[in-house]
Length: 360
Image (cartoon, rainbow, N blue to C red; front, side, top):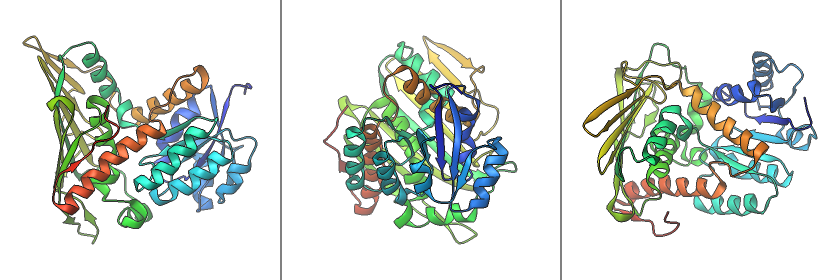
């Protein structure tokens, strides 16, 4: 370990932590030195699984924040704990990577933006979908003018079942079913953050959002906020929508969540299709471009969902090493949160929500 190595403490070692840990383990610029979870045995199991045998293990986050051998904390906690723990981490002068969504309302987000921007240490809201290799390739093609000026974005999120999918821990599902701890529904607000981030990434902030959010009862008694449809309007007449569907008997392949995510971006003279996200339906290519009357399939783009976590963490480590801004910054994270909250508010009020601030 050199003096430049970033020493990482992970607070929250639930299932998703396996994906967050990959790049910290394999990157020569980082080392996991501490883990924390209320379930001490779970944290110990993660340390052993990841080969972090010398890492400190605790069930008290205050212990992690007090350690001199932790430079950066990765916060993987229920949404209602994001603000208090992130504020403590900032006060402890740690570099912070905070799982999305940054908070459960804008009042909390404003507090966090103020604290993050006043801190001398970098702060990041962790969002991985914009770092998914097919998404990154699509953004590069669009920036090169492959489809002309983007005019619309259509996002389809389809949940189903999968023989190889993760089994969701009951504890992780329980807090997502409770609006007090989650801030909103599991598909539109929680997972929806990824989709709103995609729309923001390609099209900027919306000026207006309108949504229909319905609820489907699961066989185990829980609920999913689907089928739902959220439409949005951007500057200069650009438009988009997010369709969320739960198909309980639909087989979706993949090693993570049984969910497929598809994106279509239409421009003035071309179209891009991005296939796959959490999982896949069929053997569609990761990326397809229609431009100048030609179809180009990009099949050599890595599309495993874990790659989005790897690339997101790698980008942050490169920022820490070479300079620049993380993505998402606290202010960008607030913009995406505002997008998601507008969808929830629209469905509750039964009317469009106009967003007149922070236009990109």
